[in-house]
Image (cartoon, rainbow, N blue to C red; front, top):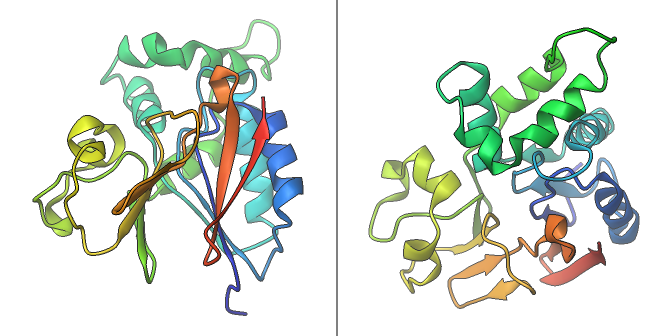
Length: 215
């Protein structure tokens, strides 16, 4: 069945309670409505593992769910493969490691469950809709979409945010927190600092309606 509505949810950062309350609020209908997550499911918040568990449970109810990779998932993968030993933990990764370790028997190692590893490796870099591009951090201005780097798509800030460059479609993004959703002529920012005691925000399309819950 074709999706009738599209819901795009901003950066969660381990705030499971806020995610549950937001899902209750938006009246998402499995099998009918499309659901897109902007990345940064983990780190900093109280229950990163619980957030991923919750999203995986949603995917078992509907095939209309798509998840993007954020810079925090990219850092986690680098950390687990030994390519990074400091950046991940310095950016709140300690809460993710603690969340996974809490689920292990006493004396056990900190391990990421196999289904979570499949999830992290399945995350998309961007999604194209009829009228929008959806990406975690943004795009590099004056660079063709096919030539954008993964690093920019998960990390870029000011060169994208302060640019009026026309990417051909409006860009919906997260990554950089704002007090309220950022709405500009060429972009919409949905990270409203859930983990910083502010709000978790969702954009409903095509109505262009915002939904949010407070910390």
